[in-house]
Length: 187
Ligand SMILES: Nc1ncnc2c1ncn2[C@@H]1O[C@H](COP(=O)(O)OP(=O)(O)O)[C@@H](O)[C@H]1O
Ligand SMILES: O=C(O)C1=C[C@@H](OP(=O)(O)O)[C@@H](O)[C@H](O)C1
Ligand SMILES: [Mg+2]
Image (cartoon, rainbow, N blue to C red; front, side, top):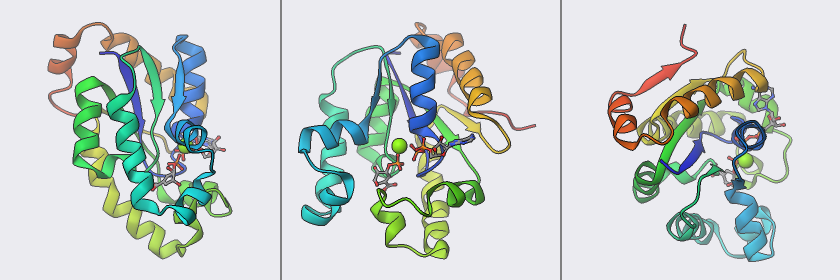
């Protein structure tokens, strides 16, 4: 296992947890959105507006395919796990953690954010529909699901780090341990 991928809906905490995990575990951290912004020289809303969502999705897959073989933490964008090809790449090259957040928390965190074009163009009802539709893809992509409701960033980082430390460096053991999806925080 080389990479740790964080997947989940917009506002589930992928970027915030990824950054903190990287300090905690002393592993390099990459945010796919930031990498794409840097390469394109455009913000996410600009990419969506000027080049279209399909172009952005191509860039996400390209990132996953081309990114060097390195021990690191990667915060994906909320749309990355929709693609079967992307899910396959992530599962084959690392440990995939799904940050499973409640929609009510997500809405509070993202509804005013101008940097998420999908939030901008959706009503609350439409966004919840998308959340429900996408949830199965995150579950499908994930080796481990982390329920985040009622947990602080610190608590989530601690649990994620525990799971990563338990499984790292043991690819065969990891495959066995992950053969049945595990959920933590499901008390
Ligand atoms: N468990 C949590 N407790 C408190 N704040 C959180 C939690 N998870 C995420 N946040 C906050 O919600 C906002 C959106 O999180 P972010 O990491 O950008 O989500 P994502 O990258 O999944 O879209 C950030 O301000 C982040 O600090
Ligand atoms: O869910 C999505 O389709 C998207 C999620 C965003 O990332 P975050 O999940 O970090 O907000 C960003 O990639 C883009 O706005 C599209
Ligand atoms: Mg993010």
